Amino acid sequence: MLENRFITALLIVLYVAVQLGIGLWVSRRVKTDADYFVAGRSLGAIPVALSVFATWFGAETILASSGVIADEGLAGGRAEPFGYALCLVGMAIFIAAAFRARGYVTLADFFRDRFGRFAELACVWLTIPISVIWAAAQLIALSVLMNAALGVPQGVTLIAATLLIMVYTAFGGLLGDIATDVVQSIVLIIGLIAAFIAAMGWFGGLGPMLGAIEPAQLNLIGEGESWLGRLDAWAIPILGSLVTQEAIARFLSAKDPKTAQRSCYAAAGLYLAVGLIPVLIGLAGAHVGVAAEGDDFFPAFLREVAHPALFIVFSGALLSAILSTADSNILSVSSLVSVNLAAGFHKRASEAAKLWFARACTVGASLVAYAIAAGGASIRDLITMTSVLGQAGLLVAVLIGLRSKFGGERAALGAVVACILANLYTLVIYPLQLGESAALILSGEASAPDGYFLYSVLAAILGYFAVGYWEARPRAPVAPLDSPP
Image 1: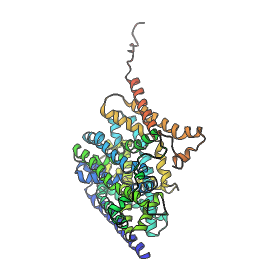
Image 2: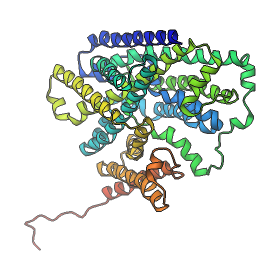
Image 3: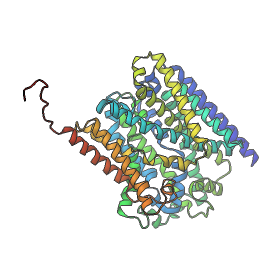
Image 4: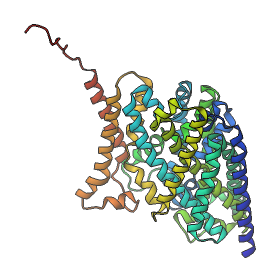
C-alpha cells in the first residue's frame, strides 16, 4: 500500500514537472498578446480539437456522471456526455466560424462590436465571476487529489496547486495551455481506456459487461419527471454552456474559420466517445455491489475490480481533467480583464507592455481563485453560485445578434436584466414563497423548480425583443429651438 502510494506520488510530481516544463518552453514563442490569448491564430484542427475536448472534459465528467448513472441509469447522464457533446455541435454550427472570421479575442469583443461598450462591460462582469469561481472549484479538486496522493495537508496542496497552474499559464498563455492540453488529453484518454479494460476483465469480457446492464437503466426519462423538467435537463447542458469564454478562446486559435468549426465537431465526437466510458462503467458497475455512491463511486469501483496499480493511471487521468479545466478558467479571466476591461490601455500600450499586463492579470486571477478556494466552500457550493448570473441573457444576445441586425445595446442589456430577474425569482423568491430554502436549492440539496433555466431563456428573449422594439420605434422629430410657435 505504501509502495503504491509512493509510486503514485512520484509520478504525479514528475507529471507536474513535465506540465511546467512544457508551459515554460512554449513561452519562448509568445511575443504578443495575440500569441498569449489566441495562440497567434495559427493552429490546425487536431491541437484545437484536443484542447476544446480537454477544456470541456472536467473531473465531474468522470466522477459525477458515473456515480449518478450508477444510481439513476441514463436518466442521470443526459448532461454527461450527451448534452455537452451536443453543446459542442451547437458551437460548431452557430458560433465557431462566425467568431473566428471576425477576428475576436474574447466573447466580450462580440458584444462591443455588435452592441456597444456597455454591453461589452456587462458581458465581462457576468463572465469573470463565473470563471473565477470555476477556477476555485478546480483548485480545490486538485488540492484534494494531491493531498490523497502525497499525504500532505490540504492547505499546502492548495497553495501548490495554485502555483502550478499560475506559473505555466502565466508564462505560456493559451499557446502553453493548448500544448499541455494535448498531453493532458492523451493521458486522460489512456487512463479511462485502462479503467474500461479493467472493468471488462472483471466481468469476463465486453459481452458479459454489457449484458449486466438492465433495460430499465437505459431509460432517458427520470422517474416522476415532468415534461418541463425533462426539457430543462437537456437545455441546461446544451444551451447553458454554448457561449463560454473558455471554449471560445480555444477555437479562436484556429488558423481559419473552417478549421475552428471542424475542431468543434471533432471535439464533440471525441467528448462523446470518451465520455461513454464513465457511462458504461456506471451502468454495469451498479451491479458490482460497490459500497459508495456519487463522486466516490468511480474510485470505489476501481478498487473493487482493478489492480491497485491502475490507481496510478487513474490519478493521472483525473489530474489531467482538472488541470485542463483550471488553466482555461484562469486565462479566461485574464483575457477579459486585459482586452476588454482595460480596453483603453490595451489600445495604447506596446506589445511588450500588453503581454506583461496580460501575465499580471493571470497571476491576479490565480490569487483571487485561491482566496475563494481557501474560504472553506465546497466544490458543489462554488459551482452552484454561478446559477443566477444571467448566462441565458448572454446566450440570447449572441444568437440573435449574430444572425440579425435587430436590437441594439439596450436590447442586449434588456435580455441580461430579464434573465437575472427570472433567475432570482425561480431560484430564490419562489422557493421562499413555498416555505423552502433557496440556499438548499443552490447547494443542490433540494430540487430547483422545473423549467427554471428555460424560464430564464424565455425571459431573456422577451426582454431582448421588448426593448428592441422600443429602440426601433419611430420618434417624433424635435423642432429647432429657434422655430416659431
